Amino acid sequence: MPVELRPSQALKLWHDVTIDLVRGDGTDLTARQLAVLLTVYLEPPPHTVRGLAARLDVTKPVVTRALDALGRLGLIERRRDEIDLRNVLIQRTVAGALWVERLGDRVIARAKGLPR
Amino acid sequence: MPVELRPSQALKLWHDVTIDLVRGDGTDLTARQLAVLLTVYLEPPPHTVRGLAARLDVTKPVVTRALDALGRLGLIERRRDEIDLRNVLIQRTVAGALWVERLGDRVIARAKGLPR
DNA sequence: GGATACCATTCCGGCTGCGAAACGAACGCC
DNA sequence: GGCGTTCGTTTCGCAGCCGGAATGGTATCC
Image 1 (cartoon, rainbow over the protein chains, first blue to last red):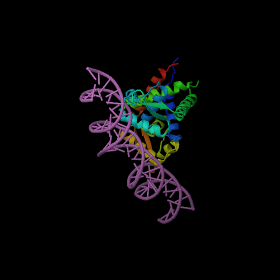
Image 2: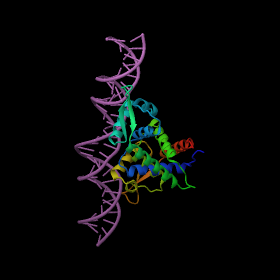
Image 3: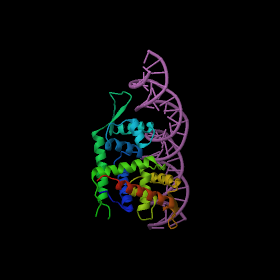
Image 4: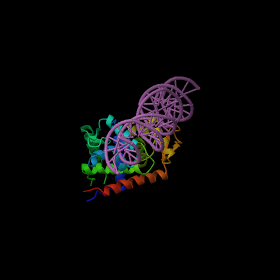
């Protein structure tokens, strides 16, 4: 059974969560950084720079920079592929998993509070 | 009846829509700019710089800059308050209304496609 | 009418992200 | 083993946003 949302509900949900992100938090991620982070945590590994770039339809330097930012925040880690040393494998971290989980909680909480 | 979402659904929804925003579109709004835009269109007027700053818990220059960017894109307009000339009232535009509506459609479409 | 409070904007130096091109390292093929 | 290809990263100049302080215009209070 798909999730049904009316336009006003969908927009209010997006609004509420966006304000949450703007207010507290401090992490202050770009849309692209957020897209990279969520892809790494929601889609099955392995994740490479090239793969993420293709998935998000952006250039590789964009992914590299996003990974720099996310790495600085401790939300992901890079590891060289032992098999093919050209590749970099993006790894999840505990902090990253917690951050993503918290985002999910916020979305759910806001969805629950939506007017019918 | 509130909208029920499971964690995996909530995160996938956010992921899908974020990728939508990153890919197509071109408008490329900051989280803060998006928050300002949605607040103007979803909450009852009048909207002032001061009010928006308080609502989003950011400083006034942040709001002014966001309004500059949104104005350049034609998504909002500024008008001086006739009553109190110190105030600037933020007005909605047709283009802005369409943009917001489109965001709502995207969220709904993605929600519909969620796995149960 | 003069002092005070308020509102939005502008200024400042600094930081971060951007696209496009070039780069070094590692692979694979023959 | 040499050469073209595939990785991810770095470099370049540039544009935008950042926070914090200062500015100019307007209202309010007495």
